Length: 114
Image (cartoon, rainbow, N blue to C red; front, top):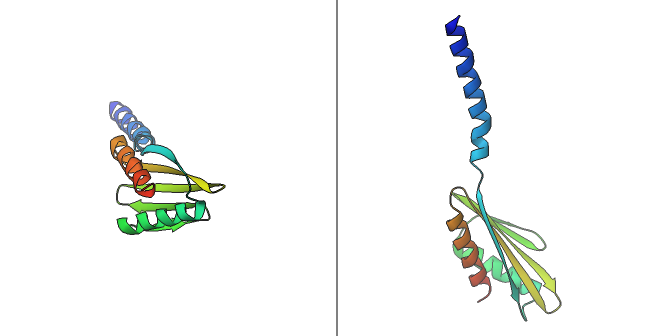
């Protein structure tokens, strides 16, 4: 009888931990934006492409965005048109560290707004 209770309790604990562990593995995400005066959306996207090429990481692109992937995270760069200006928005995600995500986000903004 006690062995059945022990096995049942163990299985229940394993089931709960299997459900709860993925929730603990959420990535850390940082975001920031910058107004680019005199830089239109096409130039913003071109700068994002150059930045990603210099990083040498796999990437995807859309009409207004670029997404890059690396071993322990990913990032997305969005360029919004505003007449002759644009706004760049960067989201960076890291598997473990908000500091790494924040530093990468700031680095990306600085490289695009050179």
